[in-house]
Length: 233
Image (cartoon, rainbow, N blue to C red):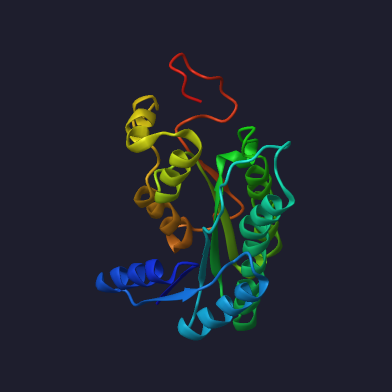
């Protein structure tokens, strides 16, 4: 049984139907993880729907651009509440559920390479992802003896509908932004969601064994290395 969630009911129900068509029962539960009541309700409903719930993936995030100097209080709150506070309380509810049943489980938090520093125009985003990175290790350490594993993936530049909207809004990239971007990247492509999904499934599954507290840089550029001659960063 798979439970997925998000703010867009139509999109979520379509995704749930497509997963169910593949042979796995899936239900969509609407929620906005920036709201604490929604986090509590989501965990409670997920437990009811999925008997023996044993995995959690925190992938919701806002990625709007702003720097130290132009970030508003509202933007700061949106990033922290969605990208760090929401996952914190979802993990809290999930771990409590596992401990009540004395069962093992696994958490994967979708982070960002921006958690290492981030561009100047990603100040609140970088801060929120860095907070979640620290929480990932903290939860892993606190609950390793409960056999609850917690890992994170620092994702690099990825091709998503959200990224396309951002490129159109901030960079005036038009329809050709993806082709231009991939042409200058070392491996000739942005990260793809379907590729990342395999890594998430591995970390959730028993195949990843005892791995916990790990933060994996899922990127083609190396943190700490200088720009190469062709301008990839």
